[in-house]
Length: 453
Image (cartoon, rainbow, N blue to C red; front, side, top):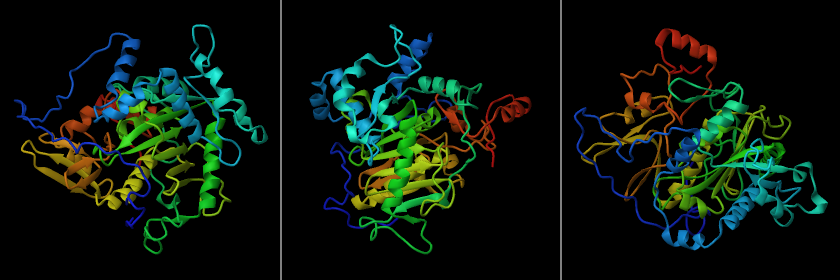
C-alpha cells in the first residue's frame, strides 16, 4: 500500500496520543550462561485457582506509559459509571446499523451463577431500559436478549472457556492451549478485500499486480451486517481492547470482537495489553475487528468467490471476518492498517524481525512469512525487540505487536531455545489434534506440535 496526503493531519483520520518519546532500553552485562535475560519482573507462584486468576489479571498488562492527566480526570468517575460507559461503547460497536442502535450488553459469563442463583450481573438490569433499548420501530430478536460480554479476560479465564466450550481444545504438558482453527489452517489472500472509495482511490495501489483486491462500500456493509447479526445472536462474545505499537506517540487503540476464546487469547498475546489505568480511559477504539469466522459469507454477494471473506474498510476503520477461524487473519489485517497509517506520519512500517545487542546495536531481518525472521530475531545472545512487525521513526525502532507468532515445525530446544521456552501457560497452539500429540509423545516425550501443512 502506498500513502497519500490523507487528512490535514496526515494520519488518515485516526487519533494518536501525544506523549513522551520511546524510552531508551538499558542493557546489562550477560550472566555466566552468556544468554541475554529479561529481568523485568520477579517469578511468582500461585497455590489456588483464585490466586492464579488474580495474578493473571495483574500480570497481563505490561507497563506502557500512562497519560497522567487523562487518568486523573477519569479517576473521578465511579466504578459503576465507568462500566456503564464501557458497555455503551461495546454496544455501539455491535450495532446493526440498519435495524437497531445496539444490543443489550452485560458483563460476565452467562453460565457463571451468582450467590443469589442469578446469571445476569445485577448492576446491568437498571441500565438497559435507558441505555441499550432499541427504538420500538426497529425491534429484532437480538434486541430482546442480553449479549454477555467477556471483556479482556486473563489467560486462565480464556483457558477455562476454551476447554469447556470449544471442541478440540486441550492443555498440553507444557501448559500451552492447543486449539483447532477449523478447515482453514492458513490465511486466505484471494478472499481478502479492501473497500475502494473516495478515501482510498488515490492512496492505494489498485489494478494488475496489486495485492489489494477491491470491493465497494455497499458489499462491505452487507458483510458487516452479516457478521454483527451473527455475533449478536450468540449468548456471549469476547471483547479485547488493546493497543498497537509500543511507541506511545504513534500507537492506535484496537477493539476485537470475537466468538471464540481461542481468538481472544491469540489477540491477548499478539497486541499490546493496556494497564488498568489505560483501560479505564480507553474510550472509543481507533479500529475494530468483527471476527465472525465460524459463520460463512453469502457466496451470491457481489465480489465473493467462496464462503470466506476478510474485508477491510479504512474509511470506517473496521475489519470483518467471515468463513475462516484462522487467527492469523486478525494479525495481518491490523498490520495492513499500520502499513496504511504509518507512512502518512512519515514512519516506515516494516515486515521484519528485530533484535538488539548489549551495546545497543540494532539488527533488522527482512523476509516473507516462513523465511526465518522469528528464528533469526530470537538469538539468545541478543535482546528480542520483535519477530515480525516494526515501525522505524527518527527516535528509534518500535515493535507494533506485543507477542510472537512462531511456527513450530521441527522446533527443538537446541536450535531455538527462546521459542521453545516461550511455549508455556498462556500461549496457544493452532490446528493441532490429539492424535498428532500422541504420536509425538511416543517418539519425542514432549508436546511440541508439528503443524499440519
